[in-house]
Image (cartoon, rainbow, N blue to C red; front, top):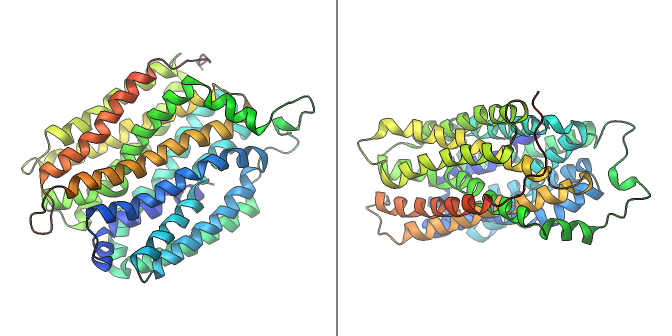
Length: 401
């Protein structure tokens, strides 16, 4: 599953690193390019609604393996696409195929590990997932330069199919001899009841909206607009932009396990730690909106590193959400929340593209003001969602180790 966790991030990084080639191939402006990237997230998000119950009722192994094959097909279609519409279809199928990896792995973690370790395991899972971004930024920029964007996606399709087969062969839903919670004859669990319990909780909605703004903003800058911003405003080459972008992944890889371990071992309130870490996450975004400009290139690496480091607070509110619901509803609750995370990326990517395209380009590059206005949108969403999160219930005290 560690290798499988790399899969959802690779197509995001690939479209980022090959953005210039793809835009030239299909003659795309910022708005249509934003749609091509965001359709991955929008389909990924829509799939979360049936995905949660599927994970709870069918089991992660079957779901991950089947959708992995769909993802391989989507990448193949995108790689061979003769026109923009077919490329959009391929990206959508890739999003559907990748939809189960993160939540499927967290469902497995909930089945295999004790509650006192869940934040730490979630941090490791998130860190492994973003290792794909680290290995896919600068290397994929070089790959796109040598193989082209089509060759890169053909390779990803083959790797994705191989990992789907390995998941079927190796993965098991839970330890041998452990029954699923819904196997208890006295359990009256049903799909409508699960949806009703999750969607009827204000705490779920406050965490879901936080997921929309935090994960959505993180993926919007890492998955699409962070690279063009560096190239348009600061004149970086694609390889140079990939180098700066890799610092986001480095920060996230370091921050997620660290934040999870601190939460499990040192603090008594996940909610307070979440608020502290995510308040720090606002700082690099304020820098993007108010401070960073040509002549201040030395701040690019620290700003991008901070985005990754403090976005690790997402590990904490995912664990917070898991603790609000019984084990038989964990897959449903986590996947519905993930709908907002990935949907946030799709919505924010597209709307940021609309904002950027309102500004006339300077030659082939958009001006600094265009990106500053675009970055203001996720910043505002983050502030609103953090205020709403203040009212979220915290049901389980965290035992110190």
